[in-house]
Amino acid sequence: MSESKTFHLPDLGEGLPDATIVEWFVKEGDTIRLDEPLVSMETAKAVVEVPSPVSGKVLKLAGAAGDVIVTGAMLAMFEPDASLPQRAEGQDTGHHHGGGHAAPAKVVASDDGDELPAQPAPSEARGGDAGTVVGAMQSSDAVHAEQAISVGGVKAMPAVRALARKLGVDLARVRASGPDGTVSLADVKQAAASGTAAVGTAPRPAAAPSAAAAPQPPAQRTPMSAAGKPMRTRPPGAESATASGQPEQLKGVRRNMARVMADAHSKVVPTTLVDDADLHGWIGKQDITVRLVRAITVACRTVPALNAWFDGDALTVTRHPHVDVGIAVDTDDGLFVPALRNADMLDARGVREGINRLRAQVEERSLPASELSGYTISLSNFGMFAGRYATPVVVPPCVAIIGAGKLSHDVVAVIGGIEVHRRLPISLTFDHRAATGGEAARFLKALLDDMALPQ
Image (cartoon, rainbow, N blue to C red; front, side, top):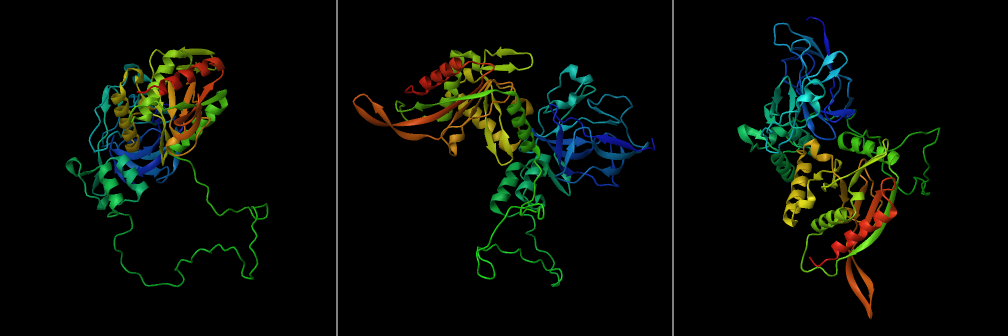
């Protein structure tokens, strides 16, 4: 066992083509034992801890924090140690990429540093891709769950470390409130808000000033030249192909979002209908998003053709008896669309509690990947920020998406005069391959009629 072994990045969930390195738990030259934490990786779904597939010396690591590694590419190289525990040759790990055997990944799904309740993977996954199950990975009938890892004397989950890096928080200076001294997401957020643990704020030894090493201030942009003439600008040409900004590689959620949008653009034949929901008859203060979800479920019962999935290759339509609404959630990291399951069976309180839970899980990056897919129709409430109408993107296999614009007070003509009504702009984009214009129009009418009800 003296020869080196190469570990290739396994599929960390649902066929994702790559993942981004968040943090290595070892460095080249270190000795690591089988199944000890090797690295945490960020995918479009979660921050995932990848354990070591062997016991031995770390010879090479694929990259640094922030680097994107393609699924199946070399992640690490080891020199196995025969005196330490090793996985038996041929033992199923749930992943196979060329010459490397991948250990089952462990998935982050907790905001307080606790373990997730482990859910067994389907038995048929044992011989296939057990590593695509988020929340637990099963290999050879053994289920593994994520635990907080101590690095540099600080005990925290990989998701917490990722958030701290993003917010510029030094974990070593954060007061831990989790069990057994674990730093939680709430601890990091509190430290970021108070500014008590910012990276680089600790006192440093004074260094002798050096004129040669002193950084030069960047040149200031001015509207006038030194000669007092207006400055002229020009786009970079062949003789000067430089730009002031730096290209930034898309990672994690944004990287996946770019792929999904491109795929949708190439596969869907979108058509958009717009109208306004008249809320003038509403009694008292009501939750607009909850009413939108209710109106969508009513419209789905009225016109099932839009609560469906369409297979463009097989030319088949699957109409669903239930309504799972994908709720678009905007974050700094990119767009998430978690599914509000069985929305047609929930009352107003159940819808609001469900939406709040999904938003919190998205913010904490603790949402299982299974909840980011499988919805039957989706809602984008972009009007919370700005915009009246839009052309929301239908993501296959869904047939339709509803967009809600910015609430407005409009002058409306009524019999005998005019009135000012509160109205909500609605945009309905649908895949014209799967539904007719008439079906879409009837769906939109049913939605508007329900929104107009007093309560």
